[in-house]
Image 1: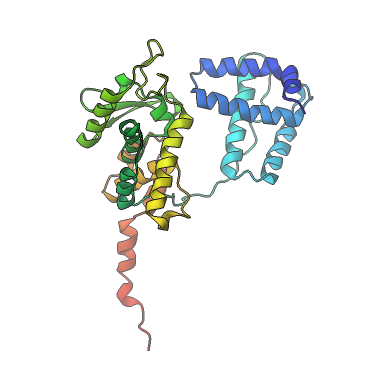
Image 2: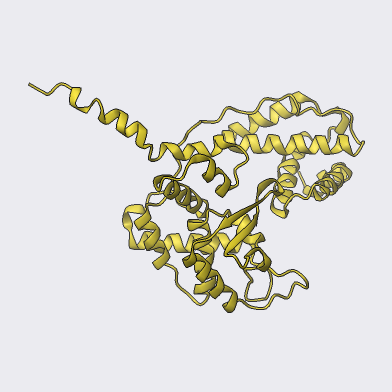
Length: 306
């Protein structure tokens, strides 16, 4: 099936959805991801008329996604995209019902222990940063590993978000701001990155991280900076060769370090910008001292071998 045929059939609905997302203030990355998810779904139901799309069509699509290897998290994201799509069409007075509204999300595995780097490995990661744009790239990696920023948050960061009091004001998921007071060492790196920064060519916008062409550094490039640094780390520490590491795992490493340093779960939730404390609780399973002490209490009660 050709893409233009789907666009001809559902172009009006996709345009309405795009307008709705812009009015909601959704980030560019979310906007693109939702349109992509909805586009794949519409390919599966083409050429069904929009008002005739039913709950069964969506359930059939979700089953197809599972057959093609999509996990629970991926399918739940696709379902969220479709719910938003039909909700948008209702609010734009183009449809009267949301066929995705009553479809239950897949149950995801809870309390999975996230992949992370140990503190000594983070130190090696820092030493693995090399290249022409060392100061800029070091600031990016440090913000993810020692301030817990998401890739998209690093991408959206502007010069004015780094305040004179040494804190950064971060626009996170759900268009919510949070304030992170930075340690002096990290402040120093950001100040150095500002001095080393190329002038922006984006008019009034003053992105903190700028490409060699004077444009806001893309999400893809920020991921590449992190991934290349991680690759260098694996060359230095072959024991990490089989570990599934990525830019987002640096955020996991930050959360792990905070828990091990005694940070309470509510404060960590604020630092990470999680909407629900349940999301933050996965990190308590990494180094739960109470559980360890509880098991130590019975260590002397285990019978010795005769």
